[in-house]
Image (cartoon, rainbow, N blue to C red):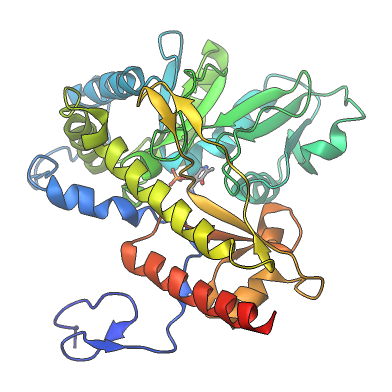
Length: 385
Ligand code: PMP
């Protein structure tokens, strides 16, 4: 039988009051549930009802929802000031996940020799896993961009630049001169970083998953300067999925409208102010615990001035990139697992096992469990020192 109610993470029993002492702090995935309370507060303005007869067709041409959605994405970028949109085409994707290979396909089809695809370590793993899986004659995955920095290949090099970076939150720039860059700006929103200037790359990826938190709606977009690259990306998406779903398009339009309805408010009261406050507090609390021990360290991030909040702001990254500093702790993921924390190992990002990624994006229960488990590990260690 189905449970009567869903208990919070790590609680069970008939009335959800029994704490499971063996419960892991699960901070493995980048599920952006920290924004759920925001949408609970804005439940009616963000609600969508779709009748059974509505939008049944495959057809999408000239649907007002799509035109409106594109306009609202442009309005969102202009409001936040994180991308120059006037000279760019937009392609929607089933998450930005779909657009990763779409862009590699589009860029590599502009030359006759196979393109080399790289990203600087530590990199988001899907660039590698997708490029390897599709195993095309038109491009090869060559791993860490730093390895190519001394020898400049003669063929086209496609470099993924994630800014801010997943996993370490750094504001990455291309490592290679003359490469064709795909900028992944999934986290270039004021909850996760200071907006310093509007991004203006030739090919840029964004996703609703990390702006509004609606990761399950699977909606992302690419901003593309070149008409020929745009046509190729569009061709890929049409062949691959015949576009994004009407339900998702409609829901995303409503969600963006709800976010923009707060435009006149002070930024501290809108979704970005809400998200930023949570993320910077989480970053500070994590650092407070890690600073109690020499066993671990976290990436270093500076306060930066932000054009959106119009002031200098503290770091608020989506992830902690934790390093195990003791010689014997070569497998940092295993060290944390032993202490009841599920993280994502450094090897997943092409990096050393001394690193592991902690997601700070999940719901409050998961974050509180992380603090509890981590302080237990640190506490034991502090006593031993
Ligand atoms: N790029 C980066 C850097 C990400 O972290 C993610 C999600 N974790 C994605 C792309 C894919 O996001 P989605 O498919 O949900 O749009």
